[in-house]
Amino acid sequence: VPVGILMWRPPPKQWKGEGTTAHLYEILLGRCYTYTQIVRPELGHKDCQKIGKAFTKAFLSKDPCSSTEQDYQPLMELTDEPVPCDKTLFWSKSSELAHDYTRVRQDMFTLEDTLLGYMADGLKWCGDPGSSEMNYHSCPDWREDCSNNSFSVFWNTVSKRFAEDACGVVHVVLNGSIRNTFDERSTFGRVEVFNLRPEKVNRLQAWVMHDLGSVHSDSCSSSSVNDLKQILKRRSITFSCQNNYGPIRLLQCVKNPGHSSCRYYR
Ligand code: N1C
Image (cartoon, rainbow, N blue to C red):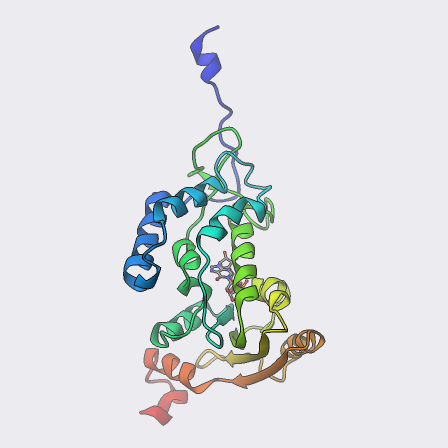
């Protein structure tokens, strides 16, 4: 039998989404070291080599459309990290604003301010059952290919843990400039809200932020936010809500000082 036949592998499948981020492994390792050595040196004992290997092992040589929570379990165990009570910040459709805020409020944490979120933020990855390599050409698209793809399952898994670990008063930044300010299909609405532990979370504080100058707006009194309130009520968690929370409004004004809504601060 010619050697070439034995070596033949089916070509990687063509998915609708973009492929694995170039140099994924090196980026993950570099971010792990940056986080554990520089951002939070108290985590300096974490083994980034082991974490990097567990990360890629979770999806390499596997069908990227049948990813499971179990695949990521070894990685989860290596990256546990406490977030102090009252300091958890969730967000939905408000990524930039929420992260701007925790950048200044260094005592507060979004998922991307914890090790695993920091490592994975903005990256894409998938493998292929017929190969031990990453697929740099394409990865499944959530809508057009499959929902149980390697990175969606990852975000569901880490978001679930982030919510389970939260305690005290927890916070969420919501986008009041879109119709579904609270979206039951988002990670926040689907995963995080249902994984808060009522025995240790006493209250969810929502901040509904409007883009400067947006016309269409939803607020604390909108029906979608009321849905959130009802879900929490059934789960025995108190809900409070504030429109255009001042400290975050100030950050919006820092970026757009000329706006009429910001004249108050000039
Ligand atoms: O679906 P979302 O928002 O409600 O997810 C945000 C919510 C946050 O509270 C986070 O704790 O869920 C967590 N989370 C991330 O931290 C995260 N970083 C990057 C969920 N998803 C995250 N991503 C990617 O953004 C991921 O690919 C997911 O599909 C989007 C979700 O953004 P969204 O709809 O604005």
